[in-house]
Image 1: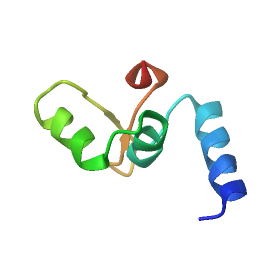
Image 2: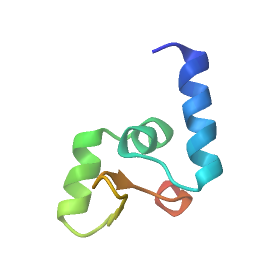
Image 3: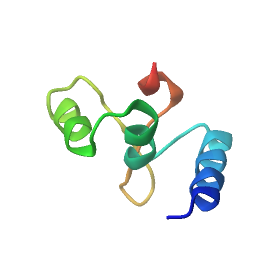
Image 4: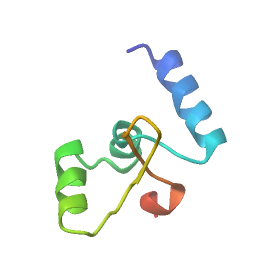
Amino acid sequence: MRARTRARKLMRSAERGAMRIGELADRTAVSIRSLRYYEEQGLLPPERNDGGRRTYTQYAVE
């Protein structure tokens, strides 16, 4: 993916106050697989959007 397109997507999600699992992985340098594992263990509970996709707030980055 082009850097400009990726940056726009990150900015849009930040404006919404939520990010998807791939964005969280990019921001934290943690693999998507690890994030899903943390979810299974109850350590990182995501919210779900209307489509059932995981969304995370800035709290998950901290």
